[in-house]
Amino acid sequence: MDVNALKNKIGIFSENHVMGFIVGTSIGLIGRYSISDALILGINAAAALTLFPLVSKLFMQALSPISDAISEYMRNRFKGRELYIGLDWPILAGASEIWVLAILLIPFELLFAAILPGNQVLPFAGLINLSIIVAAYLLGRGNMLRMLVYGIITTPVFLYIGTYFAPYITQLARDTGAVNVEEGTMLAWATIENGEFKFAFANAMAGNWWGIVLAIAWLALFVIFYIGRSKENVKRYSDDSEMDAV
Image (cartoon, rainbow, N blue to C red):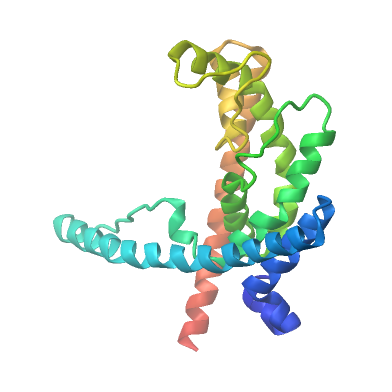
């Protein structure tokens, strides 16, 4: 269910600009835009889905020689060791699946923000929640159906954690004077990275027993995930090596 597989199944409708136009126009009509405004939104979405991967690939190509040079330098300095150079997520931003999912999740984010009881976050500034999308891309290995399911399941978690931290972020803004927060409003971080980690360990450090339980549960789940993904990677790459040999 990645972009290449979709191209074989649905042809032109899997192209970035076509998907962007369809999704953007549909969102405009759902939002009760006029026909002309909905079509303009569709064109904007089509342009975004076309340009984002292209520009991202340019950054990726520019970073790759630097990474290769650093790797070679470190291998020469540390003989007999295998060294890995870590790069931030934009190295993956050339993947079309990331930007298609970014648009597909927008209606779900707005819907959840409106209907979830207790939620106080309206994620207009963070509608493209890359904290969900990039993680979903890695977990689903580019499978867009799995990515969409992951995104829908985790969006409420982001909203509730954003609501929880909003008073603290607002107070910090007022204390530092960094942002002028009007009375009756709050600042929120709707796309908070590793929000469940921050929520669990912040409350654990505060001495809340349930925070300690959540922190322990988080660590246990992380270990289970790490072991499972490591085994899967070994099998996956060994299969790839066998295919290359054939």
